Amino acid sequence: MMSWGLKTRGLRPIGLDIGHNSIKMIQLLMNEEQISVLAADEVRTPEGIIDDEQARNKFVISAIRQMLDRGNFDGRNVISCLPNGKLRITSLRLAEVETDEIEQALRKEVVQRFGLDPDKDAMDYVVAGNVRQGNEVKSELILLATDNETLKGHIETLECAGLRPVAIDTIPCALFRSFERSLRRREDRDRTAVFVDVGSSFTTVVFGPEGKISFVKQIPIGGQNFVQEVAAKLGINTSEAESLRGMLRTQKDSRTQKSDSTKDKCAEKRQKLDVSTQQVIVDAISAVAEDLAREISLCLRYYTVTFRGKRMERAVFAGGGAYEDILLDVLRRQLTVKVEVAEPLRGFDLSSERARVHFDSDREGLLCEWAVAVGLSLKGWNEAKDDNCQAKKQVTGQL
Image 1: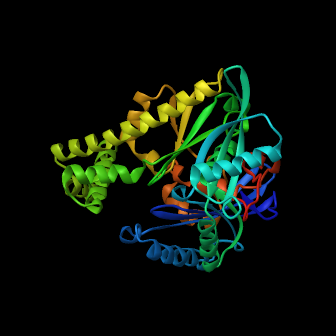
Image 2: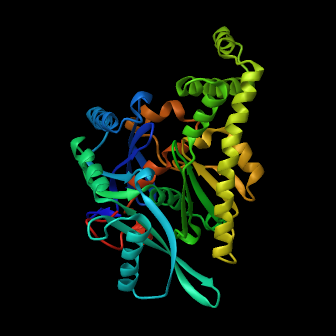
């Protein structure tokens, strides 16, 4: 995707994940095979401005400046990614042809499928592999595109915040890179996995066996849908629904943790939900989880049919939605693969004072919501492996 001469060792650029309801920044330091988290910070987006694009953009700029002003990050180089809602992705098959012919074919696809202008807008592609279609062998490609105004606006936002963009990436590639870096052991690589990021608005599914992206799917279901369904079932607004959802999670956690403190007992009493309300919340979240599990199952089926002889053994889940126990329970019942929760910072050195400021309170957590930000900061760490997510085509720039 768009990049300007990244260094492959030492201090990494800031990885900036501008999500729907939070903004995460992380900076890594590479030393041979050891990766250290130099700094990390996060700001939540106020619910009242999430759907107001102009107000939200102002908040993003202000929030990034505040995080930079705290002085934890070195330099202003940044790698960010386009939001899923602004990225167009599709898979297609072409006869095995030369690179120039592929690019000409993709230019036509951009017009026909997305209504974009290949001379003005940005596109990129990934070669997923060869597939058999009847008696023919064809190349399976993943086409990614966005309009020029989205790309320009994203860069302008970064520059207004005081950052120096050195690359613009996509969530699927950042997610894949985060996981691919962690699968260094041979036994891990042999256990083929599909990587899934359950965000607020979208769920991103990435198949990456043998260190290569072979299939990507954006599913318009995320954490927001859980909250909206709870709100609809109980006849309340989304803020109240989110609060009740949090109370249910806290109440469930309290049942698994014994505490003799009076303070803890009082807190539990204040937050206790009645049984009927609990059941409505569980049923609402389960309904959305069933829909999401069904979509992921279709992805698994498509992959198995398309790339014959290859099957997934496990699905690794990241993003804020991966903390939803009800979702994980449904996935474990519905999917034909083992379900795991990601640990994108596993094996990283978190001893830096600037890292501990943010992560100390979450040391016992999996930190699975940091997978995309980690993948962004890792871009370019190994050019040979990163080629799978490098731009093949420049139109007004590259994704």
